[in-house]
Image 1 (tube, rainbow, N blue to C red):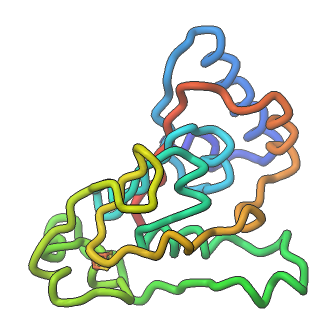
Image 2: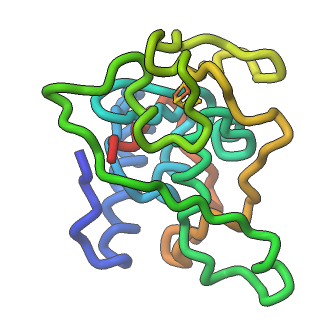
Length: 186
Ligand code: SF4
């Protein structure tokens, strides 16, 4: 759970490298919980996004990052810093700012837990909890829990997720197999 979040970036790279070495040598899987979307993308083959204690979207890394269907996932990806964007690219970027606070997990909202902060919420969202299902247009294994999901054409651009150079250097060897990472609700 957040194994590298409190570390200096160069140390982060060393720890990530060590974890991947251990994974290669022992052939094990990791459940890696983190807020840093760049590290999640670097480390994981499958990604689960949680909100208020529930998985609201899960799928392979490329599918989740390139084609988020849940509004919360889309908002998370849109909030990544733009330090790598050029002035020409920046105006195309849509940043979604969520209103309100995260409700108490002890007494979550009825229906969809995200509805009190979702800009697409309708009456059905309060009455009926959306099931985690594969939507039309999604890859196998990409599941989303939303009554009114984002269009399949809604995409987060590759450059929206900025990987620190120290971590980027690790990608030369490619990702390790069998890692699973989960972004924490917030
Ligand atoms: S089910 Fe409704 S409130 Fe929940 S994420 Fe989808 S549109 Fe928003």
